[in-house]
Length: 127
Image 1 (cartoon, rainbow, N blue to C red):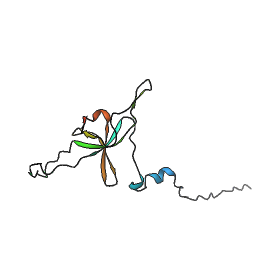
Image 2 (cartoon, helix red, strand yellow; image 1 turned 90 degrees about the vertical axis):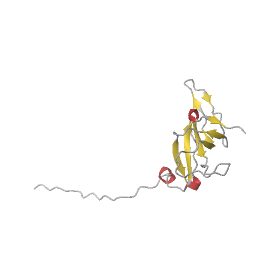
Image 3 (cartoon, rainbow, N blue to C red; image 1 turned 180 degrees about the vertical axis):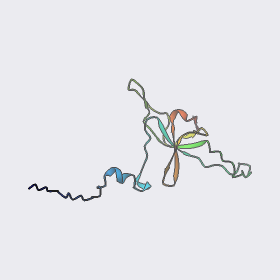
Image 4 (cartoon, rainbow, N blue to C red; image 1 turned 180 degrees about the horizontal axis):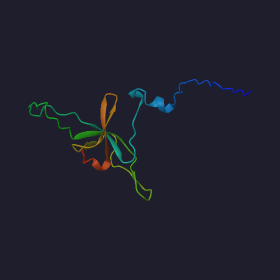
């Protein structure tokens, strides 16, 4: 006589415990900040002018982006092959001239910011 026993394994599905990483992406935008890496610069584009200094109202159908912006944050700079850090010549609050296209759009809360490489920024306005 041969008897076989079959084990009925009980499997319970347990919910994974939340980790710091999974919680981080669900936090509100007020508690989040973005620090650019390497030679990246975080810029807030200026608002588009709808009226000239002479009082002429410009049409709203012009879809070109404003080419001026304000630096919000700056990365540490670029490291060359020898390990030397080359810092960026910009700081938060600088007014810069931007290319019409390029940059990566980043939405933080209600603000739409753009990440540019330092080399992509065309110039810095001086007062």
